[in-house]
Amino acid sequence: MRLVIIESPYKGEVQRNLRYLRSCIRDCLSRNESPYASHRMLTDALDDDSPAERALGIEAGLAWRRAVVTEGPRGALCYVLPVFYVDLGWSNGMWDAQALYDEDARFYEIRLLPKEDPFFKEVAPTVPPPAQRDCSGLSALKDPTLDETLPTGGG
Image (cartoon, rainbow, N blue to C red; front, side):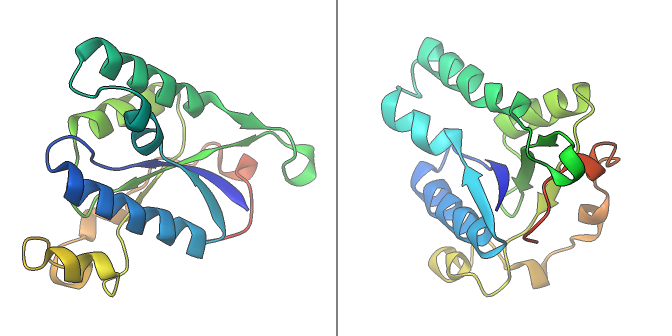
């Protein structure tokens, strides 16, 4: 299984965003990926409305961006792959994470859930499924400078 970090919205419409995150986790698992979502786990332990605890949670979650697995193909270093799920748009936290990945020259993927995902039935009509949205800009991924060192397997 490939290791991935999920970046998706949390703050704001928290209950809707948690339902969305569950769909993102299912999508990762269907791609033979083992997902990590700090904004799910750490918000259970910390108060997201406390600026100090929110900052600690963000710092702890972003520490995973430097995680390296040494059992890659041909003995190469393998990085945990960040994946941004953007069906609901970009939160400030997602923009901040993207800036750090860019600063580190890290490859990441931008994803949409499959149009048949149950999430879209739960929130319809506020979020149209991918087939009804302009997704033309999503194919522009960051330059995969680390592509050969990413774990193989999955989608």
